[in-house]
Length: 85
Length: 241
Image (cartoon, rainbow over all chains, first blue to last red; front, side, top):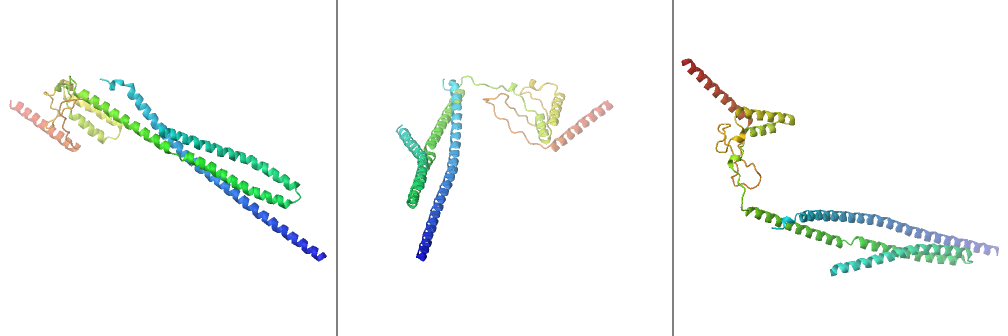
């Protein structure tokens, strides 16, 4: 009887240990996936920043070109005598 | 016009999608916090701990999948918004078009001004008497300028050149006309350069001949020898007289 109780106790401990290891494995899986998510977010931030920087550069060049055109048109329209006569 | 409206509608739709996905992600955060609290309380209060743990595990898996889905949605929206460079290319094309039109109008104005000048009734004439003859001293000064490296020394040379001109020629340069040009040096053809900028009917001056400095020095020595010969002849004639 006592031997049977000891066996059941050992079995219970074994089951508990196995469950504990399963839980640990699950937690490690979850933490790994969360880390992957974090990596993805960091990479995404970097790529988004670079894309935004390139867009900013494009916008700057467009602005400059527009300003140049505005100035040129302004100087041309300031001398209407060129177009008359 | 229709294309711009279409693009604006598309932009509005994408903006709305992005805002929606971002809002859902923010709500998910609070939901996960609430879910974690609930799982904790149920685990503490439940008699069957294993069942609570299994439920929590399942919920965590689903929550991670949902978070990944939401993040993917948000990132896709951001990526779509950023990488939409059609508007930039369109603006670039428009600016190029405006630039070309402006250049065309400028060319037209230039042509107009040129034709106006060409068909003017009174054409400006540059009389040769008011034209300054190019003196050889300037060439000399140019050569000196080429040789010299110091700026101060060039100034001194220029001053010397001016002084030489005054010594050699009793009359000022502008008093001579083109027909009565002074012979500054023998064997050198003087060319005329127009003084005034603009249209001139006169022919272009020929390019001045290139001389080395050494040859000029030799010429000077020859000239001095020739002068000494003349002086000796005059002396001889005086003696004979």
